[in-house]
Every structure is written in C-alpha cells, then in structure tokens.
Image (tube, rainbow, N blue to C red; front, top):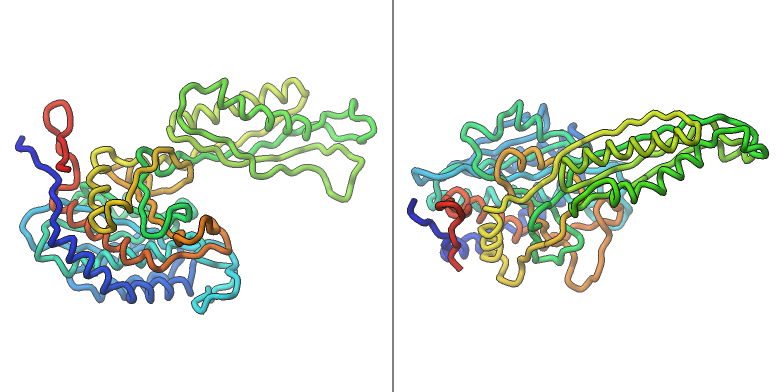
Length: 426
C-alpha cells in the first residue's frame, strides 16, 4: 500500500480560522439563547427548535428531524469533491435539574433547570463547525454527520440514535468525535486523554436487614448499621486485594440511611447504602460488582444479618482510538497553536454514553478548556456556580471543522502498513 502521510493544508486551516473568527458572535448568541431555555432528559422542545432553526440556515445541510425518539437532530453534509470518508461529530444538548443563581443577563428562564454541564456550548460549537464546513464544501469530499443528542445526563439518546436512526450507517461512519467543556483545562487549550476519556460506569444499592431492639441491650439485636460500616471499611481492600491489575478503578458510597433522627434509643432493623463504581476496563468493573457482593455476604453471615444487593452495570468506557490520536493532536494544534494542545496521561473515570459510539467506530473525545487563564480554579461540572467561557466557542468550532475536513479527506487516521502503522509526517 502506498504510504499516506498526514500533511497539513495551511490554506484550509487559515480559512477555517478566519471563518471561526467571523462566526464568534453568532455562536455566542446561539449559546446564550440555548442557556436561557435549559431542558432535562429527552424532552427538549425549545432546545430542539433552536438547533433545528440554525441547521436549516446552513447551505448544504440535510436536517433529519425527531431523531433519538423525538428531540434529537442529525445534520448531514456532503462535500463537493467526488470521494471521501464519513465523519460523525456529536454534541449532547440536555441540561440538569439545578437552580441557577441570579447574575447573568441570559440566566435560565426555567426554574430548577440549568445548563450546569455546558451542553449549550457543545451544541453551539457544533453548529459553528457546520457553518464553517459549509463555506469550504468545494474543498472536501465525503460526508459529515452533525449529531445533536438528547438525554446524555440520564444515559439515553445514544442507543436510539444508533439502533433506531441508524446514524452510523448510510453512509457508514468511519470515525467519530465529541468534546466537553472542561473546568480543569485552561481556556484556549485542549487536553486529549491518551487512553480513557471516560470510564465504565456501574452502581450498587445494598440493604442490610438485622434485628431491631433497644439501644441499651445491643447484644439482643443484630445491628445493620455496624454491618454496613464494616462493609464500607472493607471496600478499599476489595479493590487492592481481590482484583489484580493497575487499571483505574473506584468505589464511592454516596448515601447511607438508617433509623429515625427523632429516636435515639433504638437500633433499627435495616440500613441501606449505595453509590457508584467506576473502572477503565469493563471486565474489572464486573469483577468489582461480584467481589462487592461476596464481601456483603461474608459480613452479613458473621453478623447474623440478611441482605439484598442490587449491583448494576450501566455503560462502557470511552477509549480514544490510538490510530486517531496523533492526527487529532496535529489538527487541533493547526487551529489553536502548537502549545495549546496536550495529552492527558491519566485515565478519567467519569461517565459518558458517547461510549455507545466509540465502542462501534474509531473515536476521540476531547477536553476543551473553559478555565480563564487568570483563574487557578473554577466551579466544576454540575455546580450551580458553573460558568461556560464563550471565548472558546470559535476555537472549538474551528477544531471540529478541521477534524471533519481532514477526516473526510482520509488523512487523519494512521494507515496500516505491514505489521505496524506508518510514521506520520512531523
């Protein structure tokens, strides 16, 4: 096979940067309009209408409406050159049940609902990428699918897009990209996870059933609180002594409930606790669930208690495709600058159902910085104090447009040659 090296197209990159700069105020307007009408879950009628309106303005975009069982959208754009690959660019668009404090002129108009995870920004920069790619359609071939997914925060949308809307088919998607505005990354920069952008996600709910009795005679009771605390204290050793390997993994207990706060002299009959478990590897996550139940069973047997355990596996990891990493890095540097893009070496264990895409096609997930340079730290995701930095929209739109361009042109992905992969042009 003839070696195909990643070669930048300086003229195209300069054009993309020019167009991104030109689109900045439009993208800020769209982002703030979306911010005012946050909607949670999969029922997003106002969000849907804004995105649909903006996509319909863009020349060359075919809009597929009512995707993801109602309020998702897919924009399909084909380049004017004869051949090319198919690239999927995805943005999640739902909000959170968080009350936004006063202070912003574009504050949420929906009580108890806020874009506290920045999905309004994700939608805006993807619209920006579509506007840019539309302007340079004469220069590329292939197809770009702009996917606007509802329900990410509740683990929905992705499967429906793939299985019911067949978004990965007709034409078949060759690669996919997504990104998140990230509070720990400086504005104007992009971090790319070397391996796992997000981990596998599971959960557990445990109910310990003991024997109720007077607190003055604990020997006549079976204390479910004591059993629950013992299990809690043993959980770190489950990770270190029962499961081999150095893959990232964690248990977090997020609630424990027992008794009545108004009654201080009764040992209760039950204690319930639960939380989340995360791992980079799905086999490790499943093993964690099995070992946790073994520990619960053993402790309850010794204590003389009974138990009910509900241990769940929710979703897989987002693993960045090795053969796309270098091309993604070079593409982002071409738009933002050589010192603005770097690899993140540790694995993230947050959850993201972009895993439904990345488990089926080669994919890369980016962390786009939103922390102003003058600030060492800003409020995190899902906080009522979360703030999106509008200055990053143009750069993010430009990077997504460039990924669409290079991906369609077939020069983003490393090409196989013999037993290894080619060397990319420095």
